[in-house]
Amino acid sequence: MILAYIQNFNGKFKKASYEIASYASAVAKMAGTSVLGVVLGSVAEDDIKGLEKYGVEKLIHIENANLTPFDPKVYSHVIAQIAEKNDITGFVFTNNNEGRAIAPRIAARFKAGIVSAVTQLPDSLSPLTITKKVFTGKAFAKTVVKSDKFVLTLFQNSYGLVENPVSMSVESMDIDVPAPAIKVLEQNVDTSGKIPLTEAELVVSGGRGMKGPEYWGPLEEFASLIGAATACSRPVADEGWRPASEHVGQTGKIIAPTVYFALGISGAIQHLGGVSNSKYIVAINIDKDAPIFEAADYGIVGDVHKLLPQMIEAYKKMKAAEN
Ligand SMILES: Cc1cc2nc3c(=O)[nH]c(=O)nc-3n(C[C@H](O)[C@H](O)[C@H](O)COP(=O)(O)OP(=O)(O)OC[C@H]3O[C@@H](n4cnc5c(N)ncnc54)[C@H](O)[C@@H]3O)c2cc1C
Image (cartoon, rainbow, N blue to C red; front, side, top):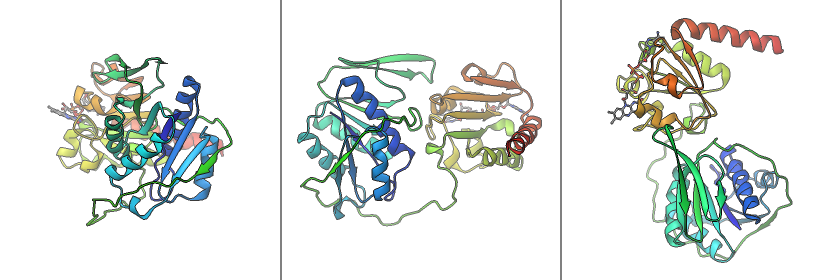
């Protein structure tokens, strides 16, 4: 069986939860086996039921006061016990903070080869062989896992939701859940209502070509119109034009949206290191020789300050025509 760790976010599932179920279901199909979903902590019943749509045939749901706050050692211990009582050949996790904290512990416990931040299905399973972009998308590497079991962490948004309706059984298990060794002293909850950058399917990002913080209005308007999160290059964050939380790249956030709009960004290798897993890159740059055009799927050579208002206008017209 393929064990999918289905993460909840304060008791609710997000797209990433159903995406990991979809991915695990496809890997299980390749292996001629089924998916064992694992959910830790209380989750709304409707959300749990929704997993049936994405190919989870059996779900182990553990609720225990010791599962809060999140302690990766406790979670890994619980998942390992579940795996030991089932015949698990592969584990899949979301490649976010929580998944990345558990996956290596599981790999060490089961002496399983781990491939992190994958964006696609394995090429084959005997042995597990998977292709990943390397050198900021300039090349592909095939990783072969020779151990009996494997662990994969999947980049959010890279696989998407693929429906595969099944009938799901939900069980609990008598399991040892040790007390967490972590104590939360303070919690800062983002109440901005903005889409978190790492979860966004669409991202509009600005670089030094935006000229200064006072020119960000049209970029923000365009992002809000299309339902995108906003991001920026490192110098933009360093200059204080935009918050550090928007900085993407080798030393910032690593993202994999469906579409990444790079506006006035040169496309330095360190920038691409954080965005090259995007499905499509759309670049606007005044310099036709800017390196971003080598990474971009669609490019416009032109002045972003003239083009953005036109894009906003065109989008509004298109929406008005639809209604
Ligand atoms: C160790 C290290 C780590 C780094 N980590 C990161 C990182 O994580 N993320 C990151 O982003 N950078 C990182 N950098 C910096 C990186 O090397 C680049 O300097 C940076 O990405 C450049 O940012 P930029 O594209 O916004 O600016 P620039 O390189 O100055 O490019 C601005 C672009 O805007 C274009 N432009 C100008 N005017 C207009 C206009 N009117 N309309 C359209 N286009 C216009 C220009 O043609 C140019 O291509 C790192 C560097 C080092 C050494």
